[in-house]
Length: 494
Image (cartoon, rainbow, N blue to C red; front, top):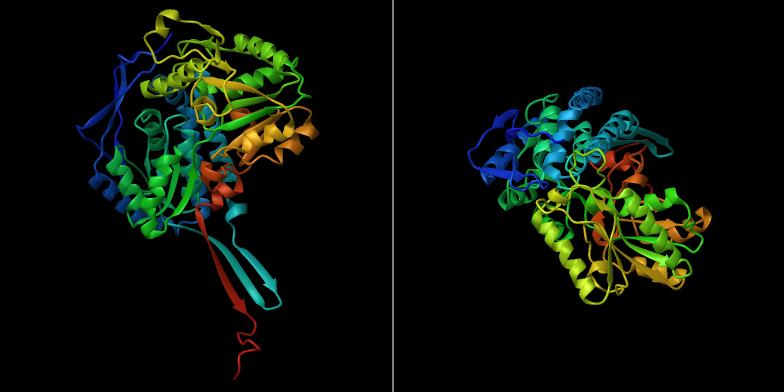
């Protein structure tokens, strides 16, 4: 039912050369924590400096490479990734714990974005020439320089390629550092991409705090692209302050879902979408619906139908079992954090309802599994409501009227995504009042994502946008060249 192989070893990639080290960090299988899937190197600060220097040197040539060639190289990489899909997704499910269908979905989203970036690059990055009364103005989109990318474990491939594709197409060079909780599959992906580019254009390092500190403070790094926690981002911003680096930060979220009185609780497909928006990837998605507010007039019926839908869709077990929809949580620390939130809510009188079924009960106790739960009766200010759970649990709370629902949704330091469920025109009006980077109507999370349009957060959920045309432009500096018909200004005396 699942592949068992000898542990693999991935490497750093610096200036086109594989860098091997004996100092390696193991990555366990979250389904079978006693088994090691593979090892990633623990690179040093010195390794990181070498990678940055290589990227800085490569930038001098790569930045002047024609856009057509940059696109062609990325398109070749896309084709090779398609051919390696099965190897990549199998490895991802083993090291991460997400079911195989979910791993395939992550790679599919990654390739869709990379293809979109290739298709739109000429249009988005072209030089604009504006003729006007005062003369001619040229607006150019030029590469920034060396980009450091620090990526998380929950969607390691898509949240790396979301940065790699536009950065390289725009003419930048890169150093990427994956998370130690999912370093293996993304390293394979980066190897495949880097092989299509000149040495030094795309570099890869692994490691701990010293590596991250160098990537965020080194003066040769011109831009930081980071996806991860808000607290970590605060340290990154401080480290980058001395050299005023460009930044794209996609951070935490505590995304609210508002269910209006005109939502059809008998719509099984809509209710299934809502359940999926809470529990896909075991709830370990930055843009998952993490708190659900339901109009009190339909609350009781909603809970009944929600539990029915959840019990039909949720099947917990081995990621390689085709019947399974939810695998283990990625790591022990996250299991303990989520369970702590659940226990806290229950100790204060909240009702915790287990959802779905456990397919592999013998396996359940061995791995980092948590059966999904709905938490009813929590207080609006309980930690399980106001903190980002990032795991398979969701609080569902009633609201009295729309003003209260909107106030509750906006009462957060975060503002990544949100969703409104109900009659479309009504839902759109409510959505317009929510403080979020993206609000989805009658869907949420990855189900409502479209790589053609910008994505990012407001408040402490981030800075800047990824995907869409903005996802390309964020890796460029705008250079304006003015040619005036007459350089003299009438109000300056002779």
